[in-house]
Image 1 (tube, rainbow, N blue to C red):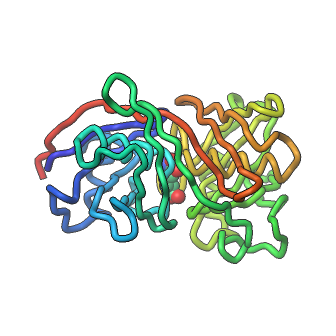
Image 2: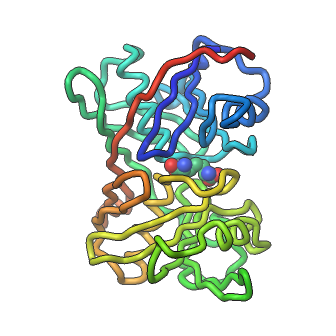
Length: 277
Ligand SMILES: N[C@H](CCC[C@H](N)C(=O)O)C(=O)O
């Protein structure tokens, strides 16, 4: 099976064209390719298929085989993939996802796509739709216990669920210990991605993420969007800010007029390969 290895800020996926390859069991293939010893090694599997409302369709699977509604770092790489491989000559590309139709603006440098701006749509703040067991809307401080400590979470969905909490020092924070407990807390019926945020100033934050079905990754695009929304809702930043992740920076805007969140960041090709399946 031919595949392409790409990353967005170090959040790396194995990309497979559904136009060329047929995968019988997506969850099993995701578990196989993600394994860093027995497979390719990645944060999951992304499959590019013909679109219905959009020009293309993206399906994304975590290393545990679970399918996510949306993946911000991956969709930027999908934009790069379809343009660089000549599947489109358009610089505006529409991609169907389980979180709805997303519109991408591609920026070309030296003949290939290096940066992509994605309209991530409106953040979902209704606890029923996130979903999270809470009576508040927006959910600004839903307390979750972990390791005998109480953490207040701001909960936002970007199509996939996110729980955001603010910490003094992300570098020193026990992300794995706390993240793995919050991910599966009973308050989140579909589990959750967990973001730990250190506010540096009103236009810059640092964030580390424990991803649902994955573990800690170097970056999370939907998580960066949820982080900016949480920062604005809690009065901590402006509506435009740089989210500094372990693997790189993403620029996030929550546009007041449209209520849409926009994410701008890199998309990088690492290698092409063939997997013996
Ligand atoms: N683990 C996530 C999917 C990948 C999201 C992340 N890698 C991104 O860039 O948005 C979930 O289960 O919702």
